[in-house]
Image (tube, rainbow over all chains, first blue to last red; front, top):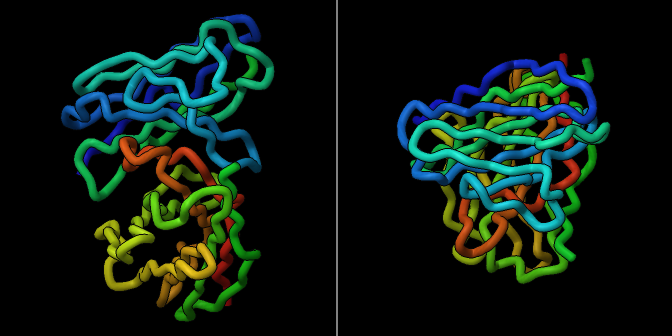
Length: 108
Length: 121
């Protein structure tokens, strides 16, 4: 089973700042890495798939990068609605599909 | 537009079973895999398994093997997830989620609203 480790656990930033979230896999996931956003009381929403492809309707301030075992989600300039929990997920070697533990982006 | 509508909240006693439904609309139900993901209170996301609505074939996470059964009824475009021998740590929100596309198996592009299952004596 591929283990995904997200860091940091919590990121405290102000609106307008740049957010950089990390996801490290226990073995290569060959860019089959997705990112989801979840706000309190809401359903997860797909942001990025296959490392760098934005899902439909996702603003351009969200971008994904990486390869092999190391991946990054970048939010170029935080909007008030971006404060949420973000999860990475791999579909390279499954079952099982696995998720990271999440990074909470909170208002500083 | 794609919609996944799940059944309502459930309260069950330890040892009982629960069956959650997920009614799909806005697309060809048999064309895309359906996944089930759960989230315990204050915790992260956990994949339970998936079903091919066309064939009925399933893949389950090893953790749930023997306790989970995923089925579907193509006549009403509905997927089901049944979890048996419930324990208190099965208390969670259970989501169904559809593959984004045929080339993106395992990318969960569409989600149901979630069903809270509470296990308590």
